[in-house]
Every structure is written in structure tokens, then in C-alpha cells.
Image 1: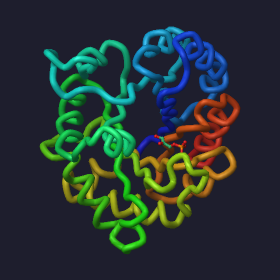
Image 2: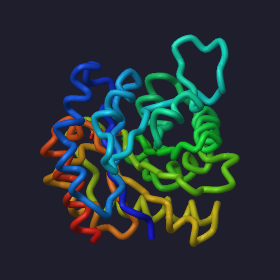
Image 3: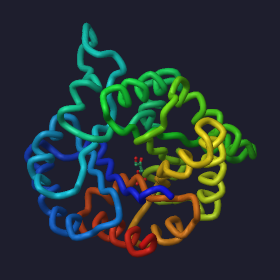
Image 4: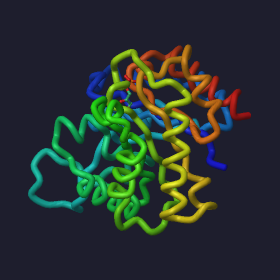
Length: 252
Ligand code: 13P
């Protein structure tokens, strides 16, 4: 069974001065919780400062993206090898990267492979837009998206999958836990078809989309949801610590 995992995606929020202060305000609360992998994903420019603020705790650090190439003429980009000395996780294929920056499944697969090659744990994000959900094709669409985003991956050790329905992100309208649970079960089957039952059962599958400390419980209660990918609520220390606490107590 997968170890539960809760990741806070700060997106493009917090200045380099604010980020370590925010991390410090969650430090004791997060450090006191065991049984859950805790990850904070600040902006690139604050990865080092947040790592220092959380030094000597078991809270891990993640980047929000990374480039697949090692180095070279890619102005503005940051490679997985650069990130590997600053953090342990990296989010790849977030729907905002896919929709606002035109990332394809092939781009996501290249990033995933590069992350793995550099010892980073990729949090590979998938999720359907509302038109796909309304057309009744969500399970097949997201399963295909996951397969294409993992093209070339042979060893899933360290892999994390985030299911984030696009219509639930930042809208205050989370998915129904049974709907997310059905998707998580389908993703588990997809992972099993790629890697075998046992390796697939160890891969944390996270739900993301308007998660709060009020609504997290029924998600974690679903058998195939192992945690959450939290946006807005991860910027509020009490909320984020509360989400991690609830996850730990439900999965204990
Ligand atoms: P919200 O929790 O703000 O809906 O964002 C979810 C998300 O995109 C996390 O990666």
C-alpha cells in the first residue's frame, strides 16, 4: 500500500522574503505529524530558502516544473539536474503547464524521465477538462493521458500521480469524492497494466482541486486516494497542517 502523501503547490505565490516565513510558520505543525510524506513546492527562486526554513524536519521540498534537457540554450528554464540538489520532488504536467504553456503528453513524459534519471520523485499530473467529463469520456481520457505521460518509464519507484480535474482547480468546486475515487481506481488499474499489480499499489495517487481541511476527509477515505495536491489552501498554515493531520489520522 502506498504511503500517504500531501503536497502543497504554492504556484506563483510568495516573494523570496515571504516564502521562508510561510514555511517557518508551518514547520512545527507539519513536523509533529507522522505517517504522511509532506511536500512543499514553492516557486523556483525560493526552493533554497524554504529548504533552510524546514531544515532538520522530515518535510520535503518539491519544484513545480523542470526542463527535460540537461543544460543548454533554454533561456529562463531550470533543468532537473539543477533541481536535484535543491529538492526531492518535482511536479510535472500540471494542468496549468499543459493549458497555459502548451505542454504535451510527450513533453511531460520527457520531463518525467529526466526527473527520474536525476533522482527526483515526479508528481505526474493528469486530469480532464469539463467538456470531456460532460461527454462521459473522463476515465478513458485520463487513463490515456497518464499512459502517454509515462511513456518510456520502466521503473515506477518514487513515482507519484496527481489526479486534478481541470474544472475543480481553483474554483472552490471540488470533485465529488466518489467521482475522484472512481478515477483513482481506474488510474490504479492503468498503473498496474504498465508496471504490475504490486508496484502499482505502492504509487501514491493524489486528488487535487479545491481541497480544504473541511472537505479532505471523504477523499482520503476512498481506497485508491492516498493523499492530496493542494493549491490555495497550502498557502494558509492552519489549513495545510489541518489537511495533513486529517490525512494522517484517517490513514493511521
Ligand atoms: P486549488 O487547491 O487551489 O484548487 O489548486 C489545486 C492545484 O492545482 C494543486 O496543484
